[in-house]
Image (cartoon, rainbow, N blue to C red; front, side, top):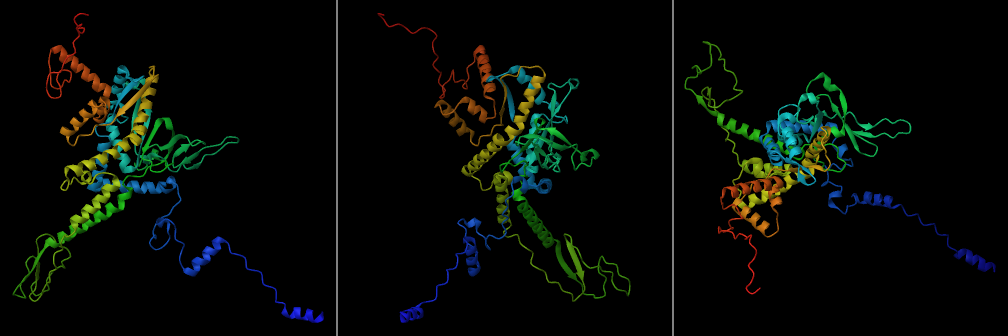
Length: 516
């Protein structure tokens, strides 16, 4: 028994050590990264960290955090400088505004789906004249064009409703004031003070919101902060009902707009510097003509004063101008450098301006006026794509925000005058688009209407006309033509599409068959 116990003691192995605990997944991943010297590769290449992804600004800020007041002011200032001094920037702002608004987005006042002639005429007496402008310079359509340019250049525009007294003798008791977004006071920011038991709202860079996030109003400077006026230092709260803040919101919850030149500012600056450098090289290359040497070492150098027996008064040639001749002494020599060429200038110009036009959302031909490489098909495709962008800007931004505010204020003015505004609405019609190939497009529109794929009203709206006004004019013209006993090819009631007389329905009852 003792031997067995000793044998068991000799054969017994030492107890095994407990296995080490498994490290946490994050720790294991970090240890693996340290051993390999590499970061884990993301499933999306764009989210990978490494040398190729260096330089990306990965921010989690919301739209208002990215577009801080300092950033917005800097972008606006640079964009305005570009529009003032860069011809392509000026052209870009003009072509967007001219095509988005043009001669004006017109309106009609309706009641229960039909034009209210009396209210419509009253509104036109006010908005179609300079009576609607607080500065007394523009009608409604001039204000629209000014607002569209400001949106592109400054990122947004602000329009205020200014109530007027009856003594001002205006058709309607209000006027419109279009101002720049600089009037919004960005220092008004943060939560509003709360009283016991009352939850307050908040401010985002001059825009005030209720606790539920409804826009309550704006803090506007009393004058333009860059105008140097003493009263411009203070700001006043203006209710949201009296303000239209129009801008393109590129992100949800975006409360201020950025200039449309933001994606192309640096590219336009680089292209401007490139043009200046090319121009300077060519000026220098064409300015220096040559160096003239003489035979007499003691002779006077033309154009340089020299005292007898004394040193000449030559000044070093530190500038040159076109047609310059530099005189030198015998033995002096000058080695001319080859004049620089302009190889690649046209290619670089086209690439740069195409990038600028893409960033602004306008066709290259509209931005530059260069139609050298455009045929009918490519021109039509580019124009149709531009029309889609224009329609999106009109119907998702300008008409709801700018024209919608005018509609509300117009109906409020009617009510203030004692008019019945029940069922009153305002419809807006953007300017029409010129046809690229009228001979074919008119024919296609006619066939679409005759086959039931289009309507006369829709075709009228595409031309920038109000359908009810168009049909009313057609009826008046037809009645006048019938009264005068005239027949024209344009009258489909009298003439067919091929020029034959149209069959007129007889007003007599159909003949009865014999024997009936």
